Amino acid sequence: MNDETFLNERIEVIAAYGDGLNPCRPIKFRRLNGREITISEIGLRYPSNQGKRMVHIFDVTDQSADYRLEFDSERLTWHLTREGDHYAE
Amino acid sequence: MRSDYNPESPLVMHIDLNSAFATIEQQSRPMLRNRPVAVVNRRTNLTSIVTASYEAKAFGVKVGMRLIEAERLMPGLIAIESDPEKYRFVYKKLSKILSDYSPNFVMKSIDEGVIDFHGVVNCRPMQEIGLEIKQRLRDEVGNYMRCNVGIGPNRFLAKTAAGLHKPDGMDEINHTNLRQVLATLELTDLTGIASHNEARLHKIGINTPLQFLDSSSVTLEKIVFKSVIGQHWHQRLRGWEVDDRVFDMKRVGRQYVLESRNLNRTQIVQRLHNLCESVGSRLRSQNKTARGIYVYAKTAEHGYWHASKMTQLPFYSDGTIYSLAYQLFSRAPDGIREIGVHCYELSDDDDTQLSLFGDVIVREHQLSDAIDNINQRYGDRTVHSADTMATDELIKQKVPFGGVRYL
Image 1 (spheres, each protein chain N blue to C red):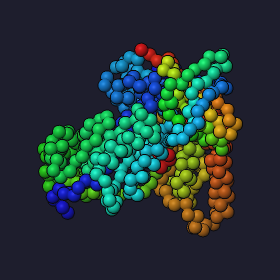
Image 2 (cartoon, rainbow over the protein chains, first blue to last red):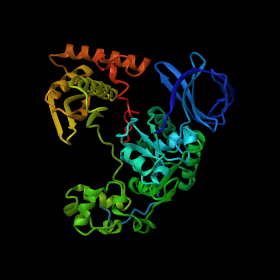
Image 3 (cartoon, one colour):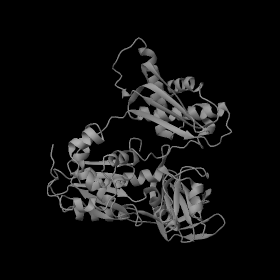
Image 4 (cartoon, one colour):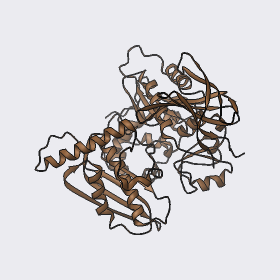
């Protein structure tokens, strides 16, 4: 069974803003414990309506674990909400 | 009726995402790629598999199999709980891509759509469009996304073509290769022929798709299917279109497999109440009212209990649905493992028919509409009955495979 960890951790993010289909691309984030994670790939980016608030979900990886980052477009905050790295071999 | 094969150049394209939910999970979570993944609706061993990735399918893991059995077949299988929002996003993307090619496109389910190019002027070669759709899916959703493309003179043959080479295939069936393709298939490879229809065909010595194709319309209509369905099969197999019809919605329902066999009656009724609110919301989202309600329960001993009731006046609100379902459910047996509620005898909610109880109905409408508006604005189930408060985490909205009405 896959064991994702569900979190609600405020994080600091460095993101690049450009053009194209995915104009916002998170590049790196720092967790509360100071650990920095460099994103190697954005798996999927999709908007999610949480009531009238729009949150953009970024499912990303650093090649050792998958993470879910959520960008709240009203409050302009980033949260780490999931971490999945307990894969059975 | 035509007995020849449809000779026109194929203009119907069927696009089918491969192992859709599992592939979307592998797209969104790169660490899952090339690993055996099963998507389930709940993280329990007794749950059934909704979709398996190709890596899991290679070890015999199948859709509908219990997770516990699948894990025996494939130790290390990664079970992921389904994430409807993500699938809806991909569905909308796919739908948008398909709509760019013809006004005549329809999404048949959350993971497949059909484009009809009849009447499209200056139509490019179908193979070229098929390759472009595959590329756009990779560009606009993600580079792990794959789809099968089938091209045929009608919907049925286009869908059959889409299933020939999975994953990521593209095939065409036309009047010149129809017999050759059907010769490679089993009867049950044809959409619409499962074990029951296969047995009907076997009864009169039709054992292969080619024999099926060569059967006369009269044989299929009078002997095999004993209805006009036989004629439809005769035409469908020859590439003539008989499936471009839209069926009216007949019923709206939901069911739930209880998370434990040790729930008391009050707890089960709370779950029933939650289902009634969900059914009410679906009914209103389609602007329908209902006059019939059907409640069922499956018991641990494989028993099936059901009860139904028709009302004189159409109903619409969660409160009415629940009160009718509750009355019926009071006669349900003990030892329940699954419950379900359906509304039927649906009609359009045009609000035009006057009745002696007009005021009551208007008040009911206004209250339901106000609650629906709040829930749309502030999030699903912001307002709901206190009775169902503890059940939301258990009874989550799941994505239906068979239709796209509630997406």
